[in-house]
Length: 286
Image 1 (cartoon, one colour):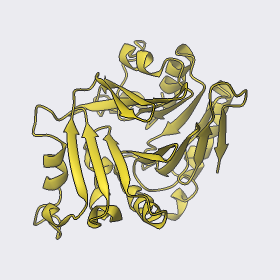
Image 2: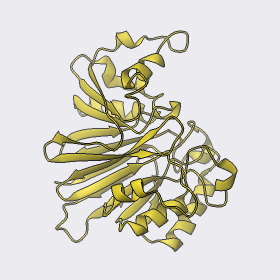
Image 3: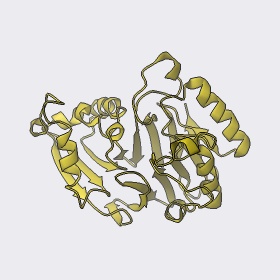
Image 4: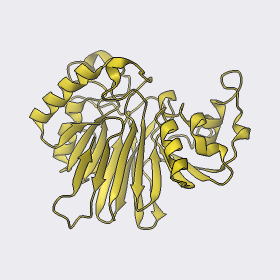
């Protein structure tokens, strides 16, 4: 009955394959959620390539993508996701911000058009299906898995997700901009009582004023929201490419002094959330 979360990509904006980004990871956003063998993939940044290799090794052939949005750093791993080239795989892809502008299929296929990519979308062999909904809607995935969503404040739109199962809940809130002193009610409602919230912490509060309008938030705002909403734990996520390992170590130290229930997401990290009746619900492994 547990929910297992694995971080395959934790970086924002652009991949950072450099020596001083090795500890926390350089791949862009991709998180695997395993609910009793059901695989839900949150975003298709560059981290999805390694996830795809792992899924093929595990011979898993049925998965769901929930896209927060479709800026390049969250979709540019999709053409390198190995399972899309297998005809024995079924993949469903959902997004909540594109129903009025062509849909998720149009965006994913357009990034594979010449002259920017050599393999056309039509060459993908997997059984692909696409669903566009409006952020704020809720839906069941079957097997006791329920998803709630909320709109995020980000250029071109974005969607936050809450995945519930067996009395446990995880939330994925990335690429959202806050207004200083005005907590986002949509986010507060979505994350209320969640066991784990993965939150867009691209900047620090000190950096934030310089990047107004860029569509991101801070780890300090994430803590404020999570504490107000009685969240179990928070993962600092979507690290700015300029924040190297030393910078992230400093954030980890500062954040732990503010709230003991926060940690910095690292590529390869796993988080297990056990059924609600257990006293020790969450475990984190590096």
